[in-house]
Length: 139
Picture 1 (tube, rainbow, N blue to C red):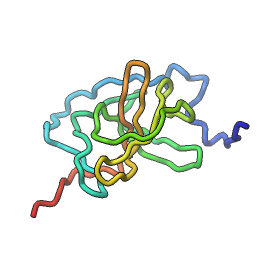
Picture 2 (picture 1 turned 90 degrees about the vertical axis):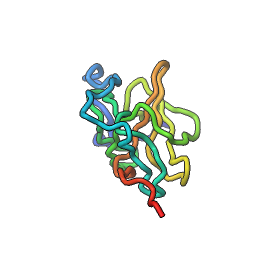
Picture 3 (picture 1 turned 180 degrees about the vertical axis):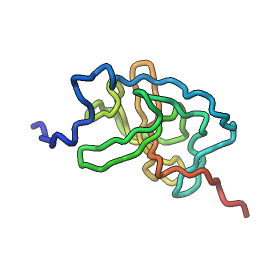
Picture 4 (picture 1 turned 45 degrees about the horizontal axis):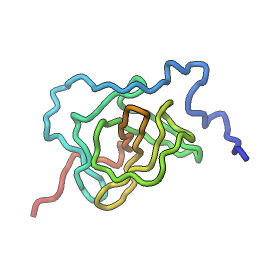
């Protein structure tokens, strides 16, 4: 049985398939320091670096809506130290040609986003509001 979803939950316009086809590319250097790290906002575990930002489907940051209507603002990163869980699926993917699975903080298991995989590419779509630029507290 296929669930029915309201038109507002469609993730892309099928008539503009080429426009929405996921294509990853590094973002131009914007004078990003190598140590500008991003951390899990829950436990402050290092997750990725600003120099890992990439553009996918025309941009680094995307506003995505899941089938339950929850809106996420995600940023795309080439590498991230997340733990990924479960089998990948193409169902309800936000990036055409990429299967996804949930990505968690490797330390506290907070949901940080998704790992996206194609036959020859992989990237992380991380929830922007769940990352911070302030690292661990020094005692």
